[in-house]
Image 1 (spheres, rainbow, N blue to C red):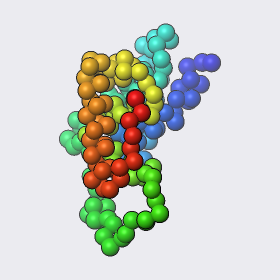
Image 2 (image 1 turned 90 degrees about the vertical axis):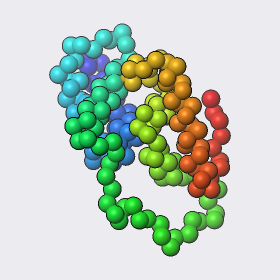
Image 3 (image 1 turned 180 degrees about the vertical axis):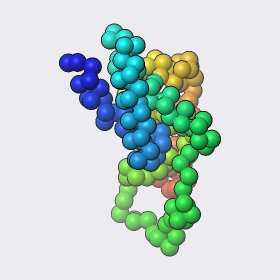
Amino acid sequence: MDFKQQLAGELPHLRRFAWALIGDAALADDVVQDCIERALVKSHLYDPDRPLRAWLFAILRNVFISSLRRSGRSAVVKTVDELVGGEGSVAPAQEDRLSAAQVAEALNRLPHQHREVIVLVGIEEMSYRDVAEITGVPIGTVMSRLSRARSALRDILEERGHTVLRRVK
């Protein structure tokens, strides 16, 4: 399989990681497009002995961080209508488990350093070593961020009355 085919196979993973970092599908697609463009231009720098996904995630993360620096903001700005949500609504009593939307909302409330680590380890099932290479921090920092991210996620969900998260690892 050639490089472009491998790259195309990683698109769903790149989109999921970008969406988890940014929280907005359109902006996430833009970051993925920039990542793919950069990967194609710099394909000569890719070491085939290393995982392609980790290399692409590092590029995507760098594109994301660069866009934050350029824009001078750390999160997607929401409109007033988006901030005032759920007034007058009642949560359904028949739902005992967390929905994907509730977990996604809780993930969006985490700082991006915590969100990226929890997505890479928990959803993408990457090793601590790969996550450390992607984020450019020591493995101990990855483990610490993951622990804090899990704790914060648990706190956010418990504050909303959901206590069904359990420790997996």
